[in-house]
Image (cartoon, rainbow, N blue to C red; front, side, top):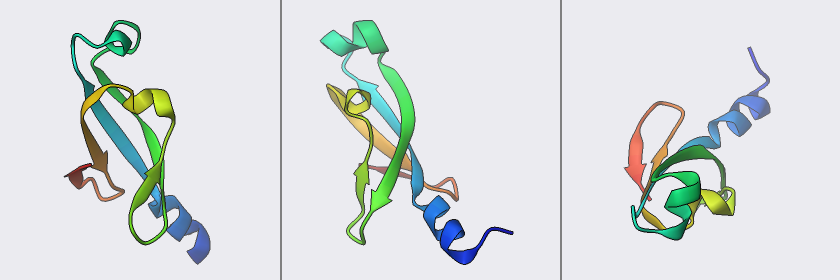
Length: 72
C-alpha cells in the first residue's frame, strides 16, 4: 500500500479527454478526439496539462481516479 502522501498525489492525476472542432487546423495533425493526463493543482481544481492537448478544443472532459466524468 502506498504511503498516505503518495496516495494523495496519485489522486491528483486525472485523465483529460478533448473533442476538437473537425475543421480546426490541429485536427488534421492531432485528430478530433484526444486524450492525455493532467495534474490537479490546488483546492480550486486548476488542472495543468500539455498545451497541444486542448488546442482548438470544442469540449473538454475530466475523468477522476474513481472514473467520474465532468465537463471542464
